Image (cartoon, rainbow, N blue to C red; front, side, top):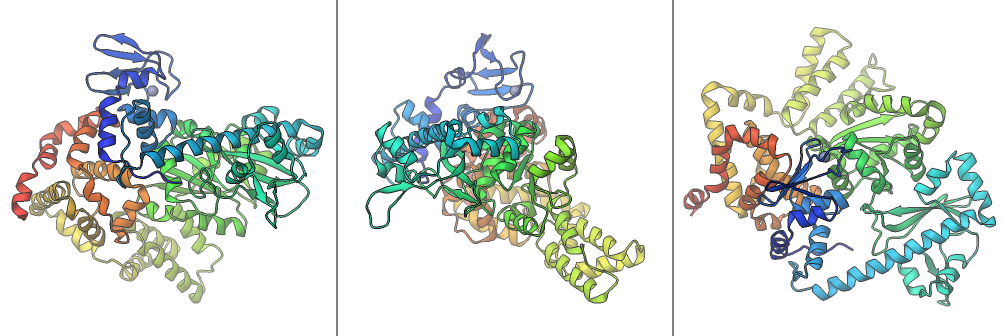
Length: 587
Ligand SMILES: [Zn+2]
């Protein structure tokens, strides 16, 4: 179930009501110091109070790790919740009316929320029972499998709350009915039992399986993965989609990994539950699994929320199937990687190993050094194209060129494309400098979107710089103050490959705008709008000038932003505030 979009009135009311000192003070012991408060920062290993909370400015800021923002941002980071979840919870806490953009739906919303809470409770009770069964006599083989074959310690079994579903038709069903007094309909809604054919009663979905609870970002049980012990098919059986478990929305292990992802500033994405468990057991705690074949934009958004540099490392099995899985897993990340919005790397383990096997044989140290060397996704793709091709043979050479041209043709940013054209040419020429230059020219002709070269040169002529600055500023002003033109501007910018602005302070402003829009619409949506495949009507609803003004004061790393803005402040302030001028021009 996805929550309806909240009405801006509700968001405003929450922002006004939620006092930063109250909100932070619920999670951090705050001491008054002058006009501000200080406390131990919960976002890094803090020993002396590094976090300052300013009631006047309504923001918090940590001088050690740079965490900072308003009350909502604090809760998003601290509770690992989405913007809407935080606003909704605060609205309920302060008893503010909850309005959605679909009209007054408070009643429906409240019912949905209490239903979700019920399902979480049922799933938590089931997880507890599965755990107890692992220690019962029926669970002996499962326990031996986890300890001996998987080499998992007692601490790891506990940390991941692993359990066992006995090979009975009604083990869980009768326990939850008789001991907890729960009705079978609720258990069915939680994905735990299946109705018998003929409609007479229910039976356990998971039987004779090692049970791995799947949790959401806040650590609530939302479903299970069950691995068969006796070779029965399927080897892995997952919970079906339910009101609390949506495929493509959750990442296995994120509840445990998010702090490490933040500290390490990168996330490792692997294929299976036991890869995540093995990595965490080996101390590599920034690992998660995608719970499906492809990474969705929602999953990427969640990872990027923990990871400032948006660095994702995919580690899939290195056999043929694993390489295909990596290609599939790239899914929606590909577009974002091409845009330079995420830094996607691929870790290819040697000799057909999965992370679990590799760790058992080589240890965590070697795994870490491979992580550090993991190539960028595009380099990896290029290697895949070249691997196994004999470039001395004309037909294979031509195949490689065709594949590389289509790969490079997807790159929207001219600077990156140019860089890779050179690399590819060098690689194909086998080190012959003159051939490389010829090849580069030839490839450039073949790669689509040729206009980059002429245009960027033109803009870079001395007399043109002022013109470009004025044009960019004008465009940004238009974008901010004439909301109905936003979609058209985005599409046009993308088509003309102009969406990386030339001037540093324009790029900064554009990044701030895009990140605000992403927060409201989601990363995938904005990219779809750029490509022209999404009408993006909601873009016009955002009060960007005001949101930006808020952002400049309370969000992110205020000190870093301010340093840049000190130089460019007047210019940006003019773009943000001076809307009347543009409206006059258009009317
Ligand atoms: Zn900190």
